[in-house]
Image (cartoon, rainbow, N blue to C red):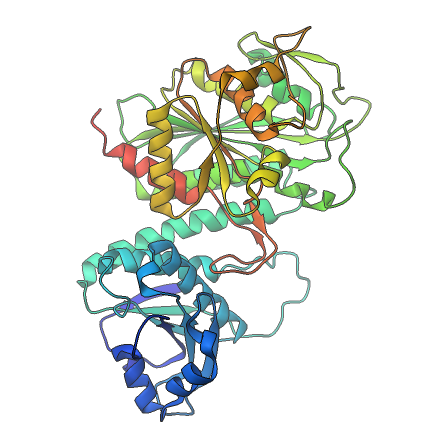
Length: 500
């Protein structure tokens, strides 16, 4: 799908669908809708009268123009109060418009962005709108044996006369790169476990690295053993697909050290191991690679955006399966770095992978770390599917990641890291145990990871509740959301501006 910026009146653009915002708190229709209403003999006003909630955020009403305008249909997008409009809401609305266009089998969609008030610059609106449209147009039909004979959305026209052509090209190009990174992450998560094994995930990462000019190394099981990364090995030893770790190296600032490491959990399928999960929703455990997918998607984006910064990406991958070779509850593992961990539950496996990867990053003297993982069901209980969890051992680093998330429009809520919680993960026969029980489960899991970071600033992001959605809403379709990619990209861009 292509996105074009047109310097024209949106009323003059031929298209299958024209998407226009309608706000709750406007006394009149506004200039844009007044012109449409006039051309359609008062139909817009009639809808506003007959459907009181037509301007409520997230509502949509379709009007056929019957040849009265170059646009064949008009989508009135309920946009709430204009004073509540944010860039994320704009991203949501343009994604919504793209989804509506696909369902209406429209090939062309026109979205005017100069009618949104003066809260944001035209450039900010354009970037959010372009991102939203490309995210909303996403679909995953890889396994459909018979593709439906339907028209596909192939062009989105963003209408604005407030930007020069060169600037608009740069903005749209950047938005496309970020959206494609998110969609790559979505693809990786949406693929089922029989296909997306650790080896296949490494293959996806290798293809991405080649296209984005990023260095890559795949550390296989034999090398993991030599390095002493026994946490990753233990989790993967019950599977016929050996574990591995993907190492990605982006060097946009040659001659300088890595500025940070991104670490993503890559459990390609999680049965829980011998601590077997209940059968309910077990099919959704293909989603447990969402953190690793986010790192791969974000690295794909920065490889093409080329910010002046060096970033180390680590994706430890394994399949957590029960078998005669599987690790057991009660086992004690000596992790990379020498710390020992008592395995209380084989279903608390993600933190074992991440702990080894964190130690690897610390050994490489990376000064700051972000890990992202579908780590705990407890985080879903605490925050639901609206916000992801966050923890940190460093206030300044935590604030930087928070600021990046806010700029990206992604919601993260910080959980406490009080010392008293640490007692729950202390073992009587080893240094640590891999589960602190049900109470404060998301917190104790994050604190477990912090023990392996030492003095290195670490931000832990738990995306267990936000990695997928079963509802089509805004720019999200049912399935993987690609959460985390936009935050990591914003973080890289912000840190690239820091003095060396």
